[in-house]
Structures are given as structure tokens and as C-alpha cells.
Image (cartoon, rainbow, N blue to C red; front, side, top):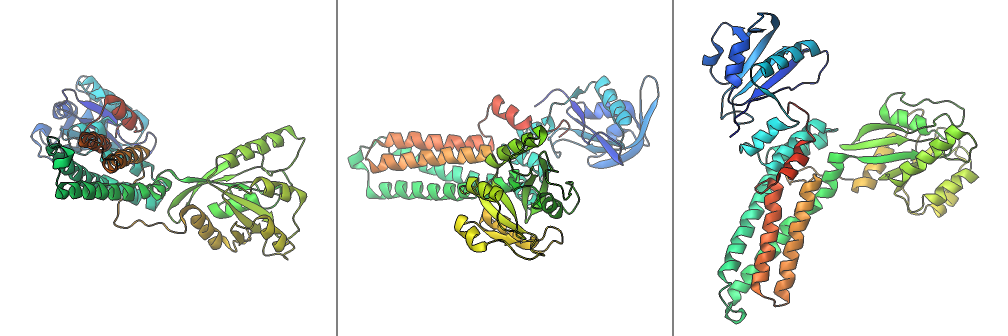
Length: 458
């Protein structure tokens, strides 16, 4: 139970239709009663009701704004505390004035994520659900939003809690056998341990295997457009974005720096990066752009190598191809609306295992095939967001992998006929990892790391 009351502006600062100042804590109702003037005594208002009135400074009687005040009483609120939301006209002066007034009346400015932190600490949600809140806010595609909403709904937590229950049952059985010698263990006891460990291993593996897709949907992937100058890289970026983001001219070397945007490729948040044309140059600025391009290539999840299909491969093309042979790469044959002059036999010999797509970045021909190729390269062509849980958070993945490692140690212990109390230790380790995942066991360091990613007011 918290004894102070927190306050914050919960909407982005700037001009807009509505801005919200939020209060949570024991003094929320007292504070709003001191600064709100409406048709009723706000202290008598029922929970989950909205009231029209004015925010007025109690000493100067200056009207700050006309507002709608939402009253939500404990425990049926987001934080399980008394919560008040003041819906005012959005504008930095108005919202800041209301915020300062709530602080003057006894509230404290909240820390980043403190409202959600209170929701967790008061048992409203578990830690995995709390982390889903920030993922919802930061979702870049419908698919990544769906994964985050599923986690907020508790689907991951339910699966993990089922695992915890199974582990507790198995651990209880193992610890009950500690008083027996290895020779006294019956076959039924041995079979139950073997089956239990196998089941937990299978469930953990299923969750971990979902993390490849989950992490891509949550964090996105980087895809770098590369090639020699004037092959249509910037035109390709503009076509993918559906807008003229990069300057396009017939002059080589127009793009001299990294240009990065996010696009949605069948649910994948793709950070698409346009780079300077790769060539030897004495121009200092262009040379820096080429250097940055190679650095972007080194950290890329996928590369789109753009070649001009209307002319044979050049010496510059061949040098680039040689450096990209070991990279995850799609060959984009641009200018397919013109006569094809590129030697495909030579190209397939140089790049035997790379997917190749013919496009025209000018008229959009072949772009759907390119999107399919990108999706196929990153996710084997499929994004399966069905009824199963998809793990996307690095902290969760790490906890699940550590739990699996403990289970595998327990299996090895059993196979090597070592003491059964060692198995109990490994099961305790696995259970600890799952407890940390959902926040049953946590530390201030973990909580600080989780909630520092939130904005103030959430």
C-alpha cells in the first residue's frame, strides 16, 4: 500500500483536442475536490462517473480550464488505488497549470512508468503484463500490436503459470523421495520424474521457439539497400515507402548519408535503410557516406543488393557481390521495364543461393514479389499469429532459456544416476527463473530496468 499520491500528464505535450492529467493514490479524491467546481460535490461522486466543471485555483480563484473529470475508486482501477483523470483542452500551458495545481495540493510528480508499476505491485497485473503495456505503445504494425495485446491479456502468464504449477508438483514429488535411497525408488517414481521433466522441457522449448518471430515483430529488423551509384536504390526506397523520401536524380552519388524509415511488410516492422552508392571516390563527403554504408551492412538482418538489369555487370558490381557472398541477401534486379542486358547465367554462378527478384522501382512492377522475398528471407515466408503464445521480450526469452537449461541439467543428473537431491536443486533453479519472469520474485533493479522504458504518466 502506497501512502503518497502521484500525478502526471498522461498525454503527449502539444496542441491537440484533449490532454489528460492523471492522479493515483489515497489523496486523489481530496485533491480533486479542492480544485474542481461542478454541479455536485465531487467527493460524493460514484465510481466510474464523469463530471463537467472547471479547474479553479483555490486561493486566487483563477479558472485554469473547463474540464471533464473521471472518478474511479479503489480497488476497481488500473492501479487498484483511487484514480482521477482530468480531461482538459490539450495545450502545454493548460496541462502544466493543472499539473502544478495538483502538486500544490499534495500530489507528487510520478516517475516514468509509476502508474503501471503500482498496478503490478498492487497485484492488478503481473510483470509480463506490465511489460506488454510499453510494447502496445511502441507497436509499429498490426501484427506486433496483436502480440503485445495477447501478452497484456495474460496468455503468456497463463502458460508460464501452468509450467510453474507442473514444476511445483514435480518438485514436491522429488523432495518427498529424498528420504529414500536410490535402491528404494520404485519404477513408478522414476517414470513420473522422467515424464515430468520431458513434459516441462517440451513446453519450454515450444515457448522459446516462438521467440524468433516474436522478437522480430516486437523489435523489427533492419534491411539495408545497397549497390553502386545510380542503380535505383533511392527510387526503390521511395516506392517501398509510397512517398518521395529520398532525392532521386540521374547524377551518381546523390545519396551521401544513411536514410532510415520503418515500413510494414506483412506485419514485420522493417527498418529500411538507403545508403550511399558503393564505389571508390575521392570526394570526402561521399567517402564518409560509403564508409557508413558498409557499417550499416555489417549490422543488417537482411540486404537488398540493387543491380541495374538494363546493363551488364560492372567492375563495381562484381566487387560488391564478392563482399556480400556470406550475407543474408536478396538480389534486386531493377529497371525490368527496360531491355534486359544483365548476364543471368553469370549472376547465378556468382550468387547461386540468393533469391532474385525483377522489379521496376519507377513504375512499381514486381514490388509484391520483393515484399514476399523479404518476408521469406526473414521468417521463411510465414508469420503465424494464431492461438499459441508468442514470446517477444528479451528478458522473458532469457528466463525461459535459463529454466530450460536447469531442466536439461536435471535430466542429465537422472541419466547419470546422481543423487536425487541434485535434481531437486535444478528444479528449484527452473522454478526461480519462471517466478522472476512473471514477477513473483523480483528486485528493485529488475523493476527499475522494466519501468524506466515507460513515459511519465503511464
